[in-house]
Image 1: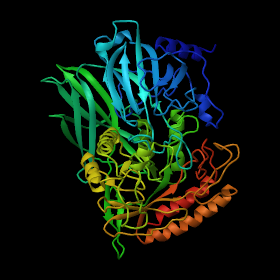
Image 2: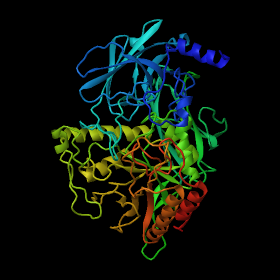
Image 3: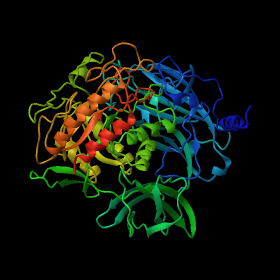
Image 4: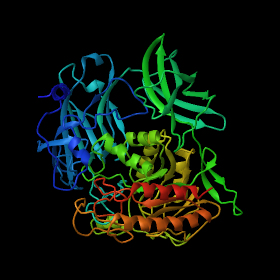
Length: 628
């Protein structure tokens, strides 16, 4: 046995992880990173890059699992599942569907390190889809709903003094047969609807903290005044505690786990607030994604009792009128008009579904998008793990962030009739008239607001995000003016694209048209920023890289080779440049990768690039440069 393998095995045993045999389930295509997954400790990276502490324990790995009736109160193990890959995925090692009538159970043991004595032990979940109940040593510690946001529990009081601790999780998820946000997941995958994702799909981990510790922080930059405003939430603070914030010299590719020691600015936090001035300010942009380090400390009687490292950036998102005779409203970054151009990014993987097999794979998609000359990604009705946004921050990639939809108006018969009935509405794509709201009940609306609020709170510190998108193509759309107000209340530093692709209530900052396959702007409103939120979808099935052999499709039909794809793409780009000159301020091409039977990706589902990348980048940079 190699020394490194021995060390990993010993670490796995010390953490309570199994060294049992594991292999991916099923015969579908996989990415090259699937072979790099270590079943003893998959996704070993620190999962929260904006708030790093030195000491933590990763609980990813092989857990016991079972699928039972939804009302079952106990389970017997059916085997092993590889966390954090959802049970339907190949990389879970299971590859089974669950559904509304069933529950998914997990269980594993862990050991608390001896040097954590006297600390509070926090149990963190990156994301669990959708409803979870958690027990430690047989005692219920909490319940959570929401498939896209991190949550945690202080489990100190539930721990035994020593030895193995038992963690159990129960998950229920109705996917599209209930009211929760679920994006492109469907009980029966077809067309633009994909395989369900049930259960744990992001890292599970433990962290020791002092009883008094930093719970969260939020930074808003003001480039016009060269200032940062910082809000800090300290749990268990006592009178006389000294809370300080330091802004550190950073750089492009800055890593909060290896921070600089050069202090650019520092201030004492009073009543949870502080403001610092940045004298020699450097802004963040796609061309120069400069990041500042952030260091927060809590000191009591001269002793540091908590410290976290993070990062932030100086950048401004706004609307600005151009110099044309029509004074079109344009998107601006750092007070400069910039055409935002990027792909529709679904964030799906053939082997992990919602979860990339490795962090290298997660970063790969962002890097490729950058290599192709794009400066923006529309993250389509999915929320990613924190490290994805970290990669966007580091690489300089702007993000339009969608809210995962709670319904769609297709009336598909894979769902209960009562669910379909209240999901149907009229979608008006090319007109400001005729669209209708979904007749969803108040329970659906209340849950939407709850989850959207939690999503924004969880990711708004990532400076790459420049636009919020509450609705897409009228799927589950309701009370749009109120939703826009609600979104603005959560974060007024970004622009709001009220409804990508209609229905329009003329209440946000952006009017967003969809048109397939060629670009077109069939409606225009001069009081708003006008964008083309989806177009393209040029299909190319690549043998050996298909999810299945039949029913593959693209919005613009399918081509025979990459040259034909690029020729059509270039033609569309020339058409797009015309619209840029008549007020179009951004565009989104469908899409980054193939997903299941959709073959309209620039890459295949298993991440093989279909076209000449140099020519693609030249075309894309030409489109961006067309807005002077």
